Length: 148
Image 1 (tube, one colour):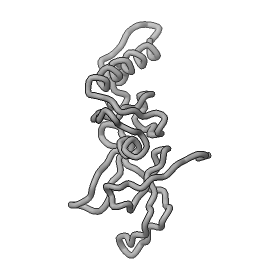
Image 2 (spheres, helix red, strand yellow; image 1 turned 180 degrees about the horizontal axis):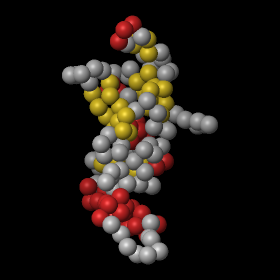
Image 3 (cartoon, one colour; image 1 turned 135 degrees about the horizontal axis):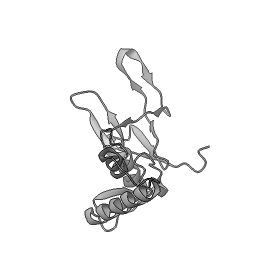
Image 4 (cartoon, one colour; image 1 turned 45 degrees about the vertical axis):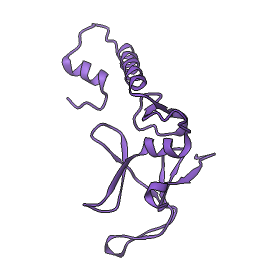
């Protein structure tokens, strides 16, 4: 199922974790967790979903825990960024598809333009036969994570 999956250390987390080219995170060093539970090397860890619909991962415990977006970790590990572009874009517009072949570095302007195209594509795919849309219909087309 995960053929050709590559793993790289997450340097900013002291190489305690690794990120895969498919957007999965695993522990790379043993860690004694709360209540003497052990998180074993190689254990695939489950991300959380942010309020904006992106997969994120937390390390450590409050108040010092760190948060990172999975798509950004994949891009930093696997995609060269010679132009030092600041944003990572999901090419297919699916915020949880963090495979390296679905990500690209881009600028703010490129990100906004891509988002506009994705909104138009979602709108065209969702056309109703009666042509009548509620405000929530339009909000859901613009942002599928919207809960209205």
